[in-house]
Length: 250
View 1 (cartoon, helix red, strand yellow):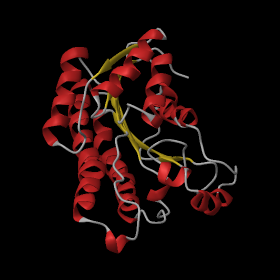
View 2: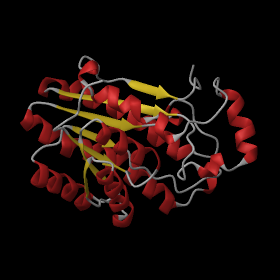
View 3: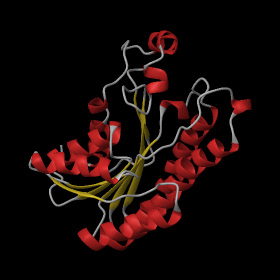
View 4: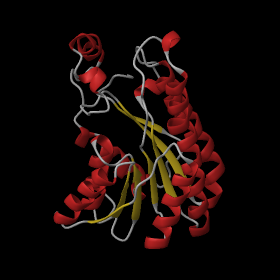
């Protein structure tokens, strides 16, 4: 695997779960990771843990659903570290679990602002910096729900499908600037974010039989896909959506 020494890796939604695991694994490969989320306390905890393990990390807050916050995150990262080598869009919102007809408008708005507008704008901002550098990698966290709609997760699934389409569009249009754009599609993972599923026995009985490996993933099993897609070993790979799902989509 490529050594990420002297590389700047910016990760949104990095205060816990998959994002936190991504940050630790890139730091272990020598990268300077910028961990970001809305919670300063949360990202400080992750950054401190990385530093105690001998890695390099910075913590910068960002609300992925707010334009000014996204702009400030990119600006501060470049100001402090001079560049962005890998942008990982991982922040996500899933504020509603229930029948599509009963979803409130505030939940609709939040899901769109964070999962679609946030990813698109953040990719633009990072891409503009990468265009100046003449190189860079953008990796979007989508979901298996972007391919097969999740039960009682209509808009979340639609937003994850939009991220797959967005990834392909950015890949085509950014390739001339030396920027690769890919997506990772995690399956059911044991995180707080997915607790509506992972802590619901009835849902698990329905979902687990559909996963050939017969279990949910642990957060640390997802990041290797990001490391590969960000590495020189994947330098001819762009526009792909890589499932890490125990065979669910097979």
